[in-house]
Image 1 (cartoon, rainbow, N blue to C red):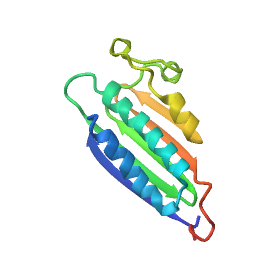
Image 2: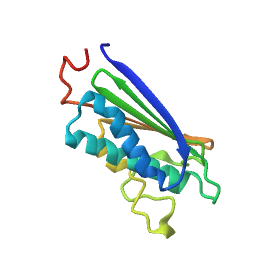
Image 3: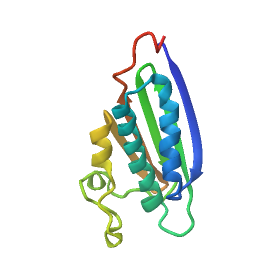
Image 4: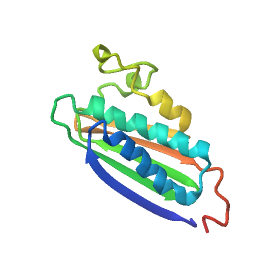
Length: 148
């Protein structure tokens, strides 16, 4: 391993913090000098994961926290978005396109297919105490001298 770094931030599960999460991860990933397309992909995936926390994890008016962790290992970015909400009862069903736990709210799905299309790997762990979405992406534009 030539390069390793991480950051972690916790914020309230409010829709106004979705933009903060995108910028926070994008700013941290800049040290690997990703392409514009790579950083756009990462920001979109983070948006989807954080929006799930805001919309689905805390169904009452009392909003809990979102924990955002970003790790850089050589040329791989790993982003983990975690909540301590109600969890997802059926993760496989939730990963289907257009599935939503709030059909009356006219949601277009939980965004897992979007996350999967922009990231190299997406893992979802959930139980009645919360959900964790772990996404990884190899930054192809990283030069060997940058990570050394």
